[in-house]
Image (cartoon, rainbow, N blue to C red; front, side, top):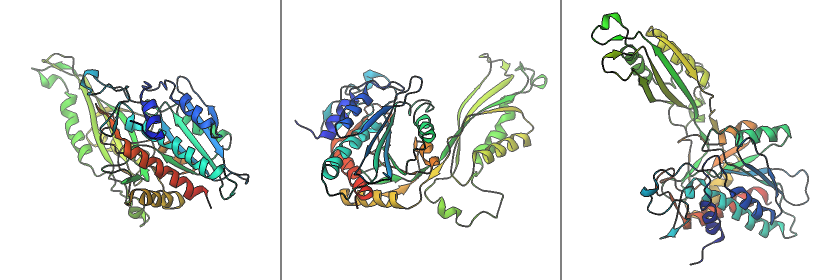
Length: 400
């Protein structure tokens, strides 16, 4: 059975075993396709991370603005136990209208849609002499999104900034849809920051607790306070009254414990210290600086002997209504027949590295029901719809 160009390209990408940060030749395949339609392709690699920066200027008009970029990643998470997969994760099998395999939905399917949307757009508009097109199309593809995300999009944006290259609008292909293709568009993401909390006590024999200090016991009231706190409630009452409206798409800031470690392994020894890993996903109603101060204040209130090691924060971002959001909503509505929900729920994405440069950023991709799971899959029909949405977005932004 024959499939569309989008589905075939997605299938070829899934067959390449690109577990993070290994690209496994995905970007080479993409470059071959893009060069055929006039893209200039450059590898901006750092350490063991492969990054593709590809651009195609349209028309003869100067300056070649706006710069509209599709951003995504070729790396995938590990498969997990192979014997639990119904279909081998790198076979690229298509059954019952579904493309199966690791990365099918997150996010090799979207990347295939980027490329085929560009191919059709260039064929329709740039290979004709109508002269009604403008701007530049770009693709920023990394192999370091599922990993530490240090030498991928973040590093490329820094390099582009050093060249004075500014992205105006960016569509990230993360799988945002919930029930039907295009039903949800991310117009922002919460920030994220990790912490490692060390609480010290005094080791001793469990039969003589008066001679020891059990940090597990002393920590519990403080942990209860941390878990129950409403973090978005600000003591400052002079905040801008438009703040709630500005953050209407964001769920509340959340605090979660992820690991608690302590003890010697013996059942009769009170531990001398415990280590607690935690994470904040925070809305723009607060900041990482405020959260750090609030956590430390709570711990001090409980008179704990503690130390906190903070990770580097991933900052929240939000794209306000404007040219990009309007084009995306209108394109989805035209292609699919339904209007999308605008949201800022979920985890982090590489959009957090692109938005601070001043770019408008939205995220639009396929259904996310199976991402990072055993038997990841994506609908082939949805891939064709998504590619059509991307092409429509380009037309609305770059054709007069």
